[in-house]
Amino acid sequence: MEEHQKNRCHWPGNDPLMIRYHDEEWGVPVHDDRKLFEFMVLDAFQAGLSWAIVLKKRENFREAMDNFQPEIVAGYDENKIRKLLLNEGIIRNKLKIKTTVTNAQRFLKVQKEFGSFDKYIWQFTGGKTIVNSWKTPEEVPVSSKESDSMSRDLKKRGFRFVGTTICYAFMQAAGMVNDHLTSCFRYKNITELV
Image (cartoon, rainbow, N blue to C red; front, side, top):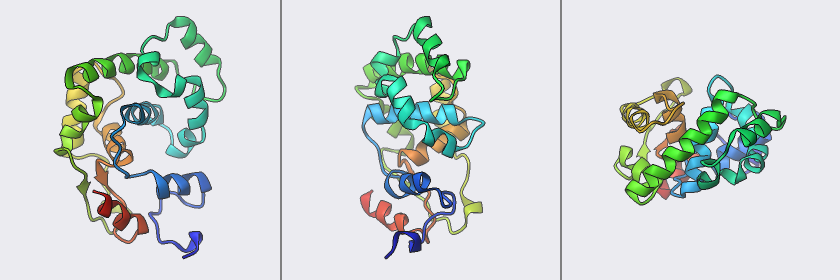
């Protein structure tokens, strides 16, 4: 089937970058700590913005933030934060940049406590992907009891920009939930993966 003829979720629209992200990444279960940290950072930067804006700047973020290696980001000092605030290739929000450093420090504590961030974060879905069966975009929620629980626990551990909506977006991105519409060609692909 031709790429443009594939039946997919509505949200990527006609944007080639969004389509590639939808078709190759969104909803695929992620168990790599560095990748989980990347999604956590990008979802925090998305707050108040569209995912398309963040996605377009992802490569710049990777370059500016040492490929989202939490052990490096956790050590960023005021000088590095100033450099990031001057970087036009990323979203230059001082609060979000400082939060990224704080969250990296908390991330490392969780890794130490649980052996990996993966082991910690996937406990909120019982270690497996929650497979939903939404038929229309309107049915897809912006939060769930799992994202509520994740948000509460992350906040308790000192993480910031981890409200339930951001946590749910993270769960969608990291494949902790399969929120592809049942009519989308990726729904079956993802369901077979989990």
